[in-house]
Length: 231
Image (cartoon, rainbow, N blue to C red; front, side):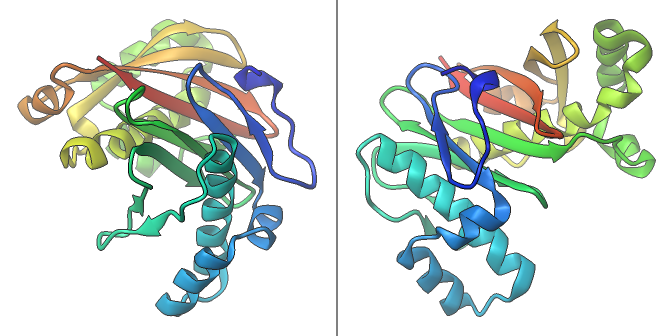
């Protein structure tokens, strides 16, 4: 099943966005209600309330569903820095916004790292745009999207979130927004491909030996981005 074919109903939907990876997506409330007992135990131990608890449980619910589709039943624990601690031999990424939760997983033997993000299909606030977008990003948006470049600025933020989520667990790189530029390889109004370009020495070191090429799509009133690293 391709990325544009997934549906969202009253359950967790599992699909294969790219070969070798499994993803699961759900409405936030639905995912929260289906959180496994080990996720509830982690949230209770942290003493989280309200939105923080809901988003954590939703993320772990879709992560568990994606892992189960690959025959994995181990819990996704929480590292000291708050990042997901995936079962041995697996890599993955979790994202959520106010409406949805999504997770993607794959065997580490097949994929070095993954990053996923979901954002509202809305303008990026002007103050955030000033921080997130480099001159190279502005130029790339104008070339790819023309008159609608500003309307697609949030995609840059989302793609850079994917870069961070993939590289940080892989090599410990914590790159600022201005360390990376996003180039658009193929685009339509509702989907396309992108590639991350290193702008600083730290980013070049983190990118070494890796191809950071991802995809994006628009569906269900949201913008979705996915990065699968390859060597």
